[in-house]
Image (cartoon, rainbow, N blue to C red; front, side, top):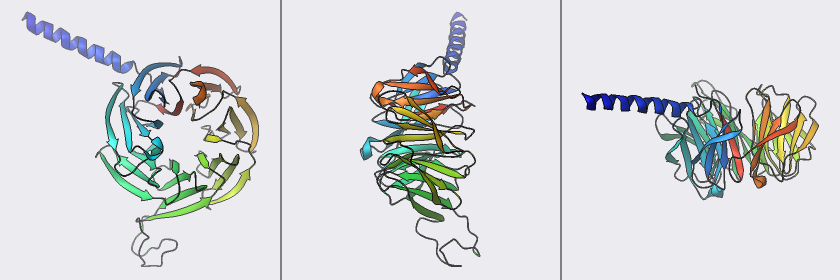
Length: 344
């Protein structure tokens, strides 16, 4: 009887401890990668303190959280040397078995959309999707451009954008679900769909070494930061063409993000975070943040932005009302990719 009671008490204690441990992960949580430490830091956005650091393998560059906020996926990049996505249980705060992408080397850009992980494979000049429910890569599409780096997947996954750094192009992929009597642009009625299935690829020349980009919340425009010439290319999504090129003076631009209301545009460019008015397309602030900048993440409520200052080993916190730096986060050496995890 005594033994059974002890076992029961131990089980209850374990359950309580497990529950407390699970609740210790903040919700929402700010996720920050450290390329030097090869870790994912889980940061409390209220205190700006890291509550956990989980190993994520070689050369982690980008991170994304599942829609339920319980799992994170990290690209192990290595300029094509690696071919895995690290996986982290954000509730238990522990690594899970990595996803082997096989011949798809150099994974970089990540998006979680419609229950799947979408990724670029830079060395393979491809993009693909991984389905966590089946544990399989269920789709791959060759882009044919050099250094397919970042991507954006529209809701419903019917349209995808990628930047191709060395080619200086953006690729727009559009999915077609055709009935026998219908046609695709460029394919005669009754003709055969192009190689790769029912996807139409449009390649759009932009500026030199385009890398970071984002799509306006209304889905009508994409703004692309060109690191090589310091310009920003604005693409009209419907017509699939560049409608304006801004002399933005953002050489070395790494990332570009809109605020959730679409009013501000933030660009990480060397030692500065450069902030533009999206409507007027004019610079409104050039904010010194450190010796170099990388990933950008905007808080979902639009109150703050986070910019990874890799050479300085911190993440700068920007108040988007005052447009000033209000804090720094120690998330490990050489921070870069960031994401939000909101547990459902």
